[in-house]
Image 1 (cartoon, rainbow over the protein chains, first blue to last red):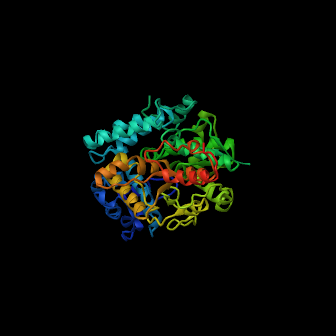
Image 2 (image 1 turned 90 degrees about the horizontal axis):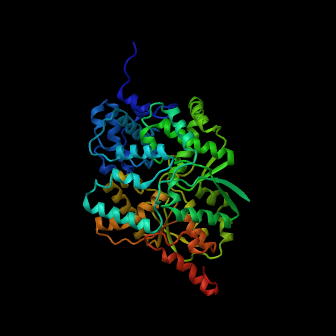
Image 3 (image 1 turned 180 degrees about the vertical axis):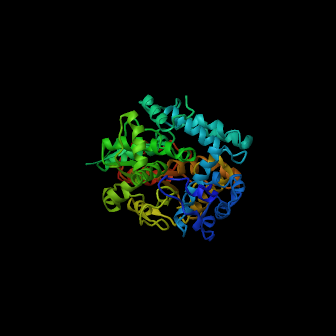
Length: 187
Length: 300
């Protein structure tokens, strides 16, 4: 009888279909945490999160902000002596929590990423003004005014487009996406 | 005359317009043609990959398939676009089943991906294909005395591709030295600018920007030079907020490497997009003006 895969092997195999990530070979050296410029803002450091994954502490892992605070700088990945692609494991955890709709409350990353993808799927191009509502109210009144001031300055310098850009062959583009994700939730 | 397919990416259309303008001007001056990829779509930044990997590969593959029709080498000026294109190509090469699946979808747009195109970052065109020696021979106005912090950021170098040096690279400094500038010792040159954390975890991003600005100031840099639109926006446009947050007084201009190369080649600053920044890189432009005045050449 087939047994359910462990949390560790689930996460290890959640990336590039062709190859797994050797999470289980982690020797807990801490090079990743030492190299990570965001570690001090994370609920658990990268080293600890890998240890927790390997110990099967699924619920505890999923409720941390750790992977949503990863900036994808890959400093951990290039230095890991065990050849673990740690930044990719963070991506895997992001996707895992998106699919399960189970992530730490109050995070901006999941909503922002979802809005970003929806923008691209609709028009083929990114457009900053559509993304702003996902975060602009989250950092207090001072940051709200700072952000508005920055946007005004960028606008005055001709650095923000007035109208959202879109690709030409949009119909084909949408059919292409529907082919990949048949029930993609896109109108 | 050498030709490349050029994938500008969303940022270069507006927020990094000066990168776009200076990329086109400097390459033209050096006898290189950048042919813009026709009807390109967004590369996906980091967000596609957060949501769905298959969708992400498909969207990148569309651009690669269109690039194949136009030439053999595609160039991206943005580090995130470059990384996504480079590694999508690599993953598709390793996984023929995935490629077949994606090709089925690409047929909806009458495209086919075969993997024949090489992906390059714009800085590689200058540091490898042209090379510092050749560039040096074309310099009309060396940027003598200008102290530059050459900022690599992340995704030009990482993840690692082959046997290249990802801990102590110096191709960026070599490029800056070849146009007469003085590259300063900038220990954080490979450390992340915060990227999209500016949106999703702002306090973390501010601390990362603060560290970089502190390091550049400590090195007495006149200007930080980048090869990525996100690095430029984070370090320049949010410098005032970082000052507010940390009680600092940083005032360090942040420009694209193509803008400085353009100046040294004698291209008028306006054509290189100068004037669109928040913090004027006056020292860089003055360095050229002084020489030009001495030579009694009228600028612009």
